Image (cartoon, rainbow, N blue to C red; front, side):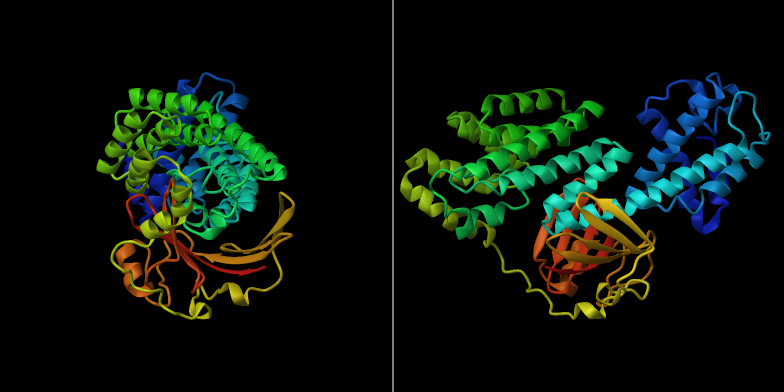
Length: 465
């Protein structure tokens, strides 16, 4: 990237980072989409274009769309600067309005605005999926990700849809069928540490088996597609390994992780957790012990309790006593440790984002989208109303670069310990590929963190069953 392009971004004042995000995301999108022809780089190589004008316009529209979506996921508001940035680039680089064989400046701006319009419709759907997933409404969350896939297929959306389907399926197993906790499993506590997860010691009803097999098949298709798009996508491989093990295809699960660890430059602790479980369920106890020890040393999710459970298995086998003790074992692990501060009883009606609270949102909308068999109604730019056959959910989310605070004083960029000091221990901590989501059901708020542990945004919600 030239210093001149950087200076253009700096010259855009408060939008300088947004402008920089536009350029970087656009160029990275060309690479991501495989636009290797020199003409595929709009801003730096416009004068050396070789493809046809129509092909170039399509290439630029793809890069605009892909780049803008990922820039949004990273927390940048690219929509407010894209048109102005194109004007600046043409001016500073002294490009003519029309370059031979290349879309005109007005055509580029028009195409960019068209993609902005389309993406602005997808973003509320993504945010709805993110919220529904955190609130354990996995079927509706999957609907959102599939809706996006139909318009904007990407590895992340296929992965999200696959994991949502996987979560639906796993909840149809009890603790006797799946005694270990998988690192993808957001519902491990409710499945393993409560009586609900242990009541069925007989064979699951035929309907449940058929339903979970259907969900696992759908999850597998989505995860395979995610990896097809990006063969080195570690999350998809770990997801597939978990899925194969749940299907009792232990050798295939082990093989997936073997291949991953051969190619990976990093020691993936969660991969060792999955392979350790697969070894254990396949009767290879020494290999299972070695993998889970490695996972414990590297802080793999659920590595320690899975290792402790394996030791119990090695000592006594899965006797009826062990089955009856699983609930006690897992509830003891989930509740162990220093008592956390209790949730603070704050009134959710005191929380506002730009003067909006879900409880006071009107029952009207500026736009409606059909997602699956339910309606997503857009009340405003950052507020939505989901009307499903089983529940209604209203949400208000912080916009990019929000400078306000919660009722208790939390701001964007703060760390989890600050939130916990003010709000207490969250009801749930939901791990995602983009960071953890802290769920506070008492004050109906979701705190969404990035992978560096900083608060990225928060979402207020109100659900009525």
